[in-house]
Image (tube, rainbow, N blue to C red):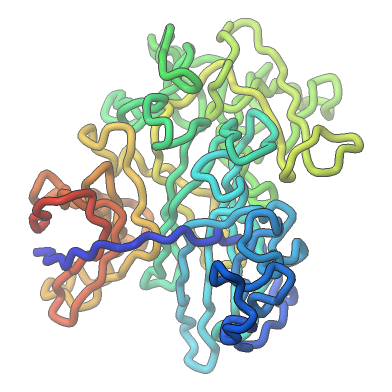
Length: 477
């Protein structure tokens, strides 16, 4: 039985957190635990109770995640150093802080701090996952590094730009084997819940002969106007990424299944036409493909766009693949398209993924230095009753330790929620496979959404969360 103490939380927007991929320990930057300056001197406060903008508001040592843009902050002195916060550190949101325990008691534990980095703290647009690491109990921290990103349709210019697939909300936990497991939400190009009329119900999968395969549509999506003129034919992504049509016939198109951490896995969802034997079935695709005339001999597959983008997607002509040229964009206008943030632009593929929320899982076996390619677990945990949204309760998960049934000790439990209802997913194999908790109340804790779990000494699980409105919140067994 999960007994819950419901707490109405005042949710305060927090700065996003950067992440580290193949992080180098030598990049750690020194920070001292000095006191916040200026806030104890009331004589220096303005009429609004805020320090004058020209004064030092806070010591540099307290800036775990800070926007590099003074225009976004209460005080200019809060702005972060781009060399520490990264060049796209304009906004940080929805952090997760985790202590990763090392097996040797002589070694200090590793503190990992995560956040979304990117689009001016919006809940859409160019939102990546970033991280900082501390090897000395938080006395010093490494620079912000991005570990995962998604493709952009249009180079982001401002807060309102939504032309990108994106990540939002994550929860982290350390499995019994020491691996750090991260679960996070991924949205195809959209504004997520902020434009719910653009979203589609379901988990984005179709069962064929007892196996679940990702669905692609040849028609348009509701992104941009909330209407679908023609959903088109249904295709599925089968073994090794090959795309099959609605009649079960293999096409010449495929989605590469292996991607590079060097590019923050942003090539996930890239779609290719194989002119012969496929180039990227067992190999990672390039960040920026070239036309066949410019590729090495024998590398002739045609890149046709990304399935997680759908706004103004082209029509699908199976016999006429059209090469798409990716382009780098960034603040430097010389030789590049201008973008407020460093980015790579591409076009929608002629086939698109279902525009719904997806749960992805990644893991690190070296305390956050490197991260695995994320895995889509929607077909394992998303229910039809969830509609278009099942998201992570941002923060951390737990590993059960005090259960009467010893087989349940070591189980990872992650908080998830749909609109107005909390729930849980769990894994008994260290975060490799997942199941939905559905034992009672139809698998939901009603009238609650973003939440966290704790385990009491007697094995009872307690949840703390945000109440959606007045009314009871019955227990979930």
